[in-house]
Length: 191
Length: 204
Image 1 (cartoon, rainbow over the protein chains, first blue to last red):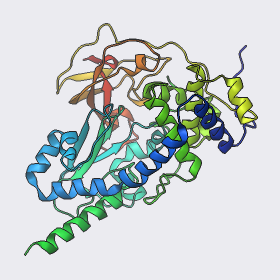
Image 2 (image 1 turned 45 degrees about the horizontal axis):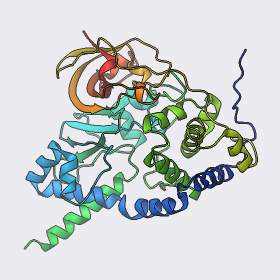
Image 3 (image 1 turned 45 degrees about the vertical axis):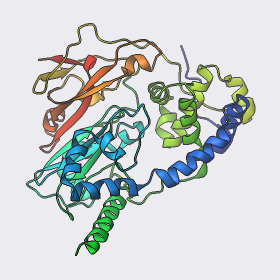
Image 4 (image 1 turned 90 degrees about the horizontal axis):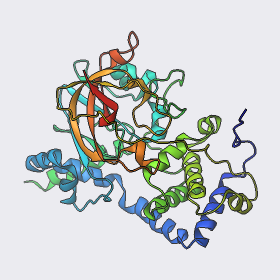
């Protein structure tokens, strides 16, 4: 009879485990300390909700851009200086309409926790109660479950303040607020 | 693998705790883990499919009790040991104690011999199969029928890529399932679209 040998009894603290890996990677010449600093800068300054806000605001105000975005998201966001690593081959953008509401469920393993039956089965009802988001009764709710790293965006296809549904992305309200601010600045400039 | 990670459709989790302004990292070690596994992928120690499967292979009680980044750390450590970057003994000497890793990897598989191309509008069924290695179809669509609503470009076939086997890249098909077909008597009318690799589907 086999026994699982790696039961989580009395492991050393998580910080000690991270220190151990980092120190061994350092010895193997991988230069983890430098990469940790680089990564910190990327996360704090480059991967920001403002990026999404700029894309959404442009799509709201520039119909030709919106069409390009829907056709090829990766190329379209490159117009705004936003790049993606090579293994993220595509960016798919979905448009919400008065009758279709898109909800994205990430492929990330940890997010599967949120795909409990209560969430998946009750669709609009759960969205409105769990997320305190009003969804018109006549709307159809479509849930997209990407099982592979095709990056996705659910975007508002019509004028604000219709809510943008971007579930599982913690920056959703920030993206929407950012896009609204950009539009306000643009409106202020327009005579 | 029909493991603990495949929680879609499971019951009993209670209310979803969702914070719109939750921090990206709760503690600094989480950011370090994210950077370290990204570095390992960047330097070719392992690929993302191997990484996901390493997390899936965690001992179930460890998996369920661990936070997201503890799972990430465990996947990273497991693969560094399995790929020979350092030994488990070295790791535990450096950590000065027990460092739980995932359970042993099993065999993978290559593309289905009888796979076929699908078109938008095709009625398809997810094969009724239990795959012991890495597989990207959530259990709640196994054996279920839907309609192809979209086609996405080819990506490495995970069942092989996670196990170091050579295989052809495969497209994924966005298959629309009726929620009430997935969970009879327990769902509101809604459509669930799941991206499904070509080898997982048959035409009906």
